[in-house]
Image (cartoon, rainbow, N blue to C red; front, top):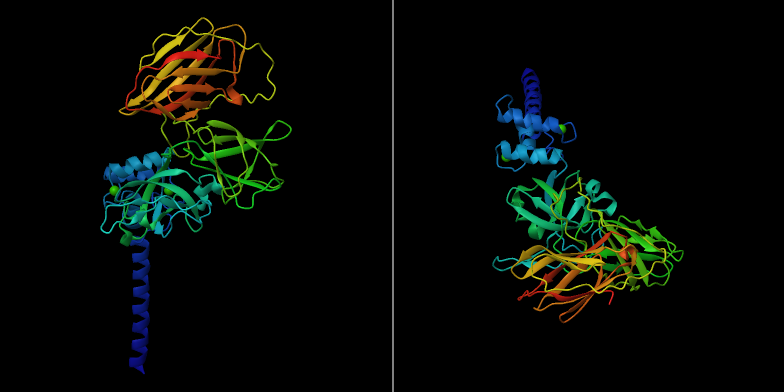
Length: 447
Ligand SMILES: [Ca+2]
Ligand SMILES: [Ca+2]
């Protein structure tokens, strides 16, 4: 009997010791699901966490176990100034920190309701298709507001850019679930969940935004989605019969749905991105289960720190003028001299034209054109023409409506920027590609 009692007591002691050991191992070496960056485990990433890392670097405290793993944001088994820098950016709202995981997806069928992404073939042997898409945790998915956003994410192995096509229901704030096909570029898949940090960046898009009407969309229940946008979409409005813009409710599945219908169309949409840029597209026809091109793309923000949480807004001037005061139309014949490929101002005593090369690269350039009204009457509607002498081709243009036939370019106002106040200015911008960038010439206004 004594022996049996001893064995039972000994067994209980062994079980207790092993259990305590396992709990300690678990708490110490396996990061809690939301622990990356949250060094003091108070549920959020704050200056207190940065301070703990700073003190560890100075030798004033010793981070270990879960706190060490939470602090080692770049997963190099050291807590040093690199981790401190990343943490400072997170506290400043410039980046977010979370956990990275992967799942099998090509971008189709996710909560954001997109079609499959265009894959990129990698250089492995045999090559396989890489889909740069991912699912965002529910908090940062933000009721679909981040759908279609381009995210620059960095993990232990590298940095990639992906488009958000889905929601990660079980994720914690900061978490991203990447397409399995691209995950190996930022982490070893065998490492499972890893620390990542990320921010929203401009998507590398070509051409104008697209309006995609949902299958089943009709004049009495109209569902439209914006695709091919440079920045996340903040707001979609349409012009009602009463002549006012009405905001459309966005669903979690990334369609802007007017439950009572928008009518038969064609529609005038006003789309605002998270940077405050505004595009207005007139004449958008309803095409069930189809894409309709808009006329422009959101401009790239100049000199902005492209951040998450603290967007630097560059508001495109917006004057939704349904019935502007009738004003005499200016007829202007500007004085034109040869335009160099660098920035120059032209014009006459009524309207000046400034053709500015904002950025120049080997086979392309970004151009900004500003018109200034120098008369004492409001200009109501404008049209600019010029001729290229090389093979310049406009790739996309914003804040205007353009037509290019060979070398001849015409740019007209949109509804919201048709008036130029006395002494006021209006600007539009565009990108051009070329092999030969000769001087534009023959500038004309309202001719
Ligand atoms: Ca904390
Ligand atoms: Ca580190």
